[in-house]
Image 1 (cartoon, rainbow, N blue to C red):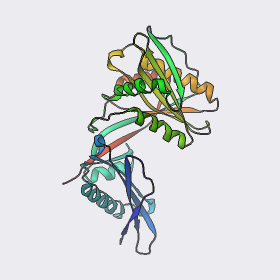
Image 2 (cartoon, one colour):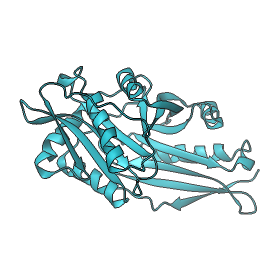
Image 3 (cartoon, one colour):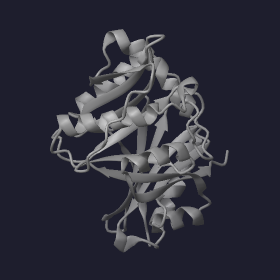
Image 4 (cartoon, rainbow, N blue to C red):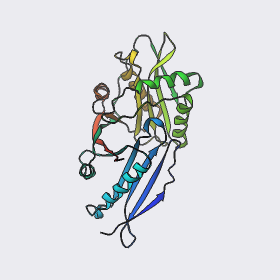
Amino acid sequence: MSIRLTPLTDPDYRPFSHRIAWLAADAAGNPVGSAFLRLHSRDSIAHLADLEITVHPAERRRGVGSQLLYAAVAAARDQHARLVVAEVGADSPSYEFLVRHGFTIGMTLIYSRLDLRTAVTPMPPPPGYRLLTWADVVPDELAQTFTNARTGMDDAPTGGITYGPDPWDVARTRHAAELIAQRGEHLMTVAALDESTGEIVAFTELVVPGDGKTDAQNYGTAVLPAHRGRGLARWVKTEQIRWAQTRFPDLPAVLTDTVDTNHPMRRINATLGYTPTHTLHRCVLHVPQ
């Protein structure tokens, strides 16, 4: 099958990344597939390039995906990326395709869903801690301590993918929240404050679609190491769910994804009533230099 690849300018430009794109067409000029390669400028992940390949079902197993993959890997090498990452369903033909081309599993993610029609039993506050909540951008007086609390995610399991240090400052914390607002979505943050120090030591974030009527997405949960084992993660997640049920009564469910080796968080999610829905592999290919 004769395939022509056309490089495209992708308008999906973000502050710390941009994408290269290709369109695959047959001899008659009909589009049969596409590829997108996201390149990162942030130092901690500049060595990674995220890949998406799509081929029309009628054109699969005819070399289209392979040609798109070769072009993307060559571009990753030219841009000095060392690892190409592609996320695919664990039992999908896409996973089999990647394995045939030398990809291995770098990380496995378990996706789960919590039906919000189910009541969640409130937890008593762990002794010595106070609950904080806010919508959208963090209040100025909490911005620095909330940013500091993000280091609680530094030791989160990442499988076989090395992401490197990912420092946050107050400007980045605010910018991340502002981007969510610009998309018309709602950011809900619940945090635990250590009453002895006045510092935030745990938090969880939830992003709710603009209409409040389709599934929300949990963005992250973290507890600083010195405060683990006290029930803080379950507490803030419980209160987040209860707040979402009150603020958005038509919200059907909350979605979350957890690395398969993150057993403590998976246990908490199961206790709260999350039900696994599907599994994705984040596959990796070392780029030949």
